[in-house]
Image (cartoon, rainbow, N blue to C red; front, side, top):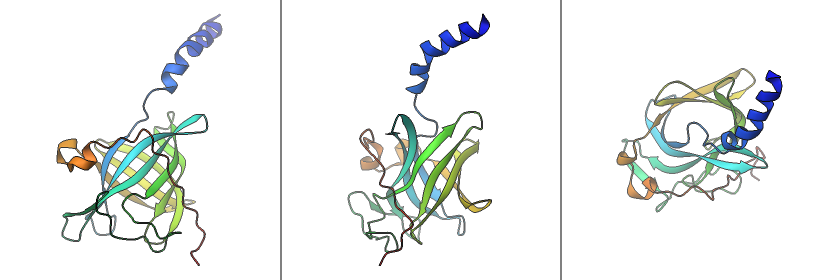
Amino acid sequence: MKAKILSVLLAIFMPAIAGAALPYVGTYKTIDDETGMAKSIVVLYEYQHGKKSNLAGRIVALFDEAGGLSETLKNPERVADKVTGSPKMVGMDILWRMDWDAEEGRYKGGRILDPKSGKNYASIIWQDAEPILNVRGKIGPIGRTQHWELMDSESLPEEIRNLDTSTWQPVEISNKKKK
């Protein structure tokens, strides 16, 4: 009897749960795991992949070596020359198909792109404490973890503060070598 009641409740509430926003959607400052310096601003956004909601991440700004914001969507300059098609770094998706696992409290099953090498890796994302995300690219058990800081909208340039990500779909980059 309890199982039937639970089934009925799940049937009623699953659509509402499925329509809920994914965790960690927002704007983050990425921190280089080797230098400790701010590298970029990435927007983590939700999109539909088949019947599932997934998480993706797009670079929307870059910092210069002195730590100042040097490029945004309005003025992209640096090129990811080792990425197929040599796209501008700003505007490029670096995360896609991240699947939320509520039991483990983390994203997994997706890919992360290293714009410097042009290679993508398996990825997981989790949070030990707010406002820092742990973003790990890996091959099997070996990998690197970066710590991304959630940004306050007031500290963002106007063009980034008001981005409409509702129609964004990630462009997935394969590991094929550029000829």
